[in-house]
Image (tube, rainbow, N blue to C red; front, side, top):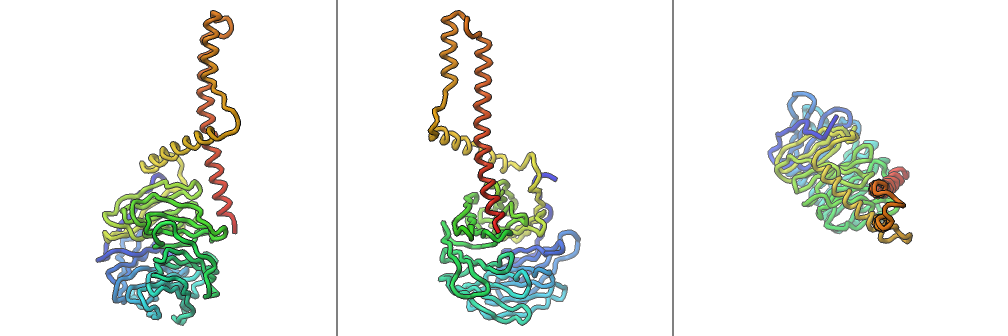
Length: 398
């Protein structure tokens, strides 16, 4: 147990890595790439990776089924492919999009697929019959990503039209709600494990979390210095990780609403990031053609990486600024005890120390200084506790 560390790395793709997904039941990762292939990696054994070919253009996304016996991929060649996860690499092709297919995902019951495309649509497909079922058509520009809610009742999508839409999966009509991205456009979107929120990675360098019940922006993070390409929620719902063109991976504590780790190692833009099913690992991939597997220890207390310490200092300063604002805005008069001690000291000198001894005054000043520090600490703790309580309420609403 300790700080996050690089656990393993893989190289085998000949072009940019665009998507990653952990196998639900085994310690395997599947990756998609602009080299027209997907690859299956085992990160607990020395066995070779399996390369699957069939697409005729860049592959933008790949996902395991919930039972892990199938994989689905989306490609610029306008097709979706279903793959059997064995060494033969057999696949069936699903056609229907009129533009590049950007994303694909199995429904929680494994019966359907959702896909998004440059043809401005979100489509549903039958897995067993590999046939088109329905289409969602309100977006006015390329749809970058679409994902299922944990219960399979809702869909979420983000597009270059700067909107994020929530859909009823069973009713392909009008969107249930539309959020407007605060900066840039959404490049990746995913439901929080609770189903109450969605996270959006934007071209405007931000990670944005929207409450779909309150229908408002709940949290916004400006931790990256470049467009954010991907994000993933920890299975517990307490953490989130994001990948960016700034070559960095950020880990966020959602209960405290702040970044806590920065993971560095990629030499070029990072396009994809994903948590493992148990949340103990995180994988990242990008334009350096490398896949990094990070071992995370998110629940450990104590010393953390340098980036976290820097962030802690920043938050503490912000907290003290908040305390100053609270003091300046309070309606209750604040007693300036130091001034009173000086006055008392002068009176004591005039009276030749008859009332209060110099030693007693020193002790009182020390006590006052400690009380002031304690007051600041309590105010800061109250502010953080209030924030945590708000987040717990959001995550517990179902």
